[in-house]
Image (cartoon, rainbow, N blue to C red):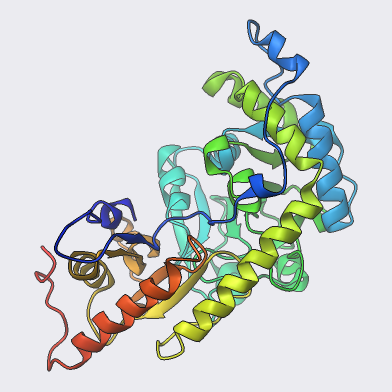
Length: 382
C-alpha cells in the first residue's frame, strides 16, 4: 500500500495528489473533545509504570467493552499495547512456535501473514465465501494437530463484511484459540459488530484507538485475554517495549470516557461519506457494498492486474488507492488462491472534500482504459 502512495506527488502540470489509499478516517475527534493534557500522571514519567497499562485506561476500556458488547470484562484481563499491530504481535508470539500453523483467510489484512512469519510459524490460507468471510466448512478441514491459532478480522478489512454471532460461535467451536482483530467493531453502519468476547473460550481480541477514534498516531491498542494468559502476555510485552507511552495512555484514558459519543459521531461521519461514495461511484463495479469500516472495493479484473492498475492510476491521475495484491495469500507459501480477484481498495472517508474528485478521476481513468482493445500491460506503470 505504501508503495502506491509513494507515487503521489505535487506537480504543476496536473491534478493535485489525492490519497484514498490510507488506512485511517478523516474523522476529527478533536471537534468533540479537548485533547489538552494536564494530568498528575505526567509527574511520573521519570519511572517505569505497569507494562499491562495504566489502571485508568484499562478501567475505561473495560467499561466501553462491557457497554458495547453486553459482557463483563475485568480490567485485569486487558493489556494495553502499541497499537493493534503490537497487540497482534504479542498475542501470536505467545501462541505460535516454529513449525506450528495459524489459519487465516486467503484474502485478508496483509499484516496477519507478516506477523505469523515473524514468529517462525506457517500460514494456512482458508478460502472465503461470497461475503469474503471464512468458508467455515473449509476452515474445519484445515485444522491439524499443528494448528495453534485462527486469525480473523471482523468487520473485515478490506471488504467491510461483518461476521454474525452464529458464525463466530462455529469458528470458536473448533477447539482452536481465536485471535480476533476487532479494530472496526464499533464502526458499523447499523450498530456494533458481534464480538468473540460474547462467546466463551480461550480467545483473544485486539482493538485500537487508531480506527474507532481515528487516532493512529496515538499508538494505543489493547488485548482482551483469558485470565490465565495475562501473565505470559504481559511478560512478553515487557520484554518487547517495557511500557506503552504514558502520555498516550493518559490521553486515551480521557478519550475512552466519552467512547459512546465519539464512536457515534464517527459512525455518522462514515455514513455520510458512504452515501457520497455510493452516489459518486454508481457507475463503478463494486465487489460489495460495505457494511462497516472505511473501505470499498472496486473490481478492475477487466482492466489488468491490480498492482499495475493502481500504479498507473497514481501516475496518470495522481490518485492513490490500494491494490488487491496487498491482501492476497502469499505466493511465497506456494499458495494459489481459490478465488482470484483484481480490485482496488478505496478509502471512502479519508477526506470528505477529496472524495468526489477522487472518484471522478477513478471513473475517468477506467473509462479511458475501457475504450482500449487490450488490458493494461504489466509494464505500463513501470
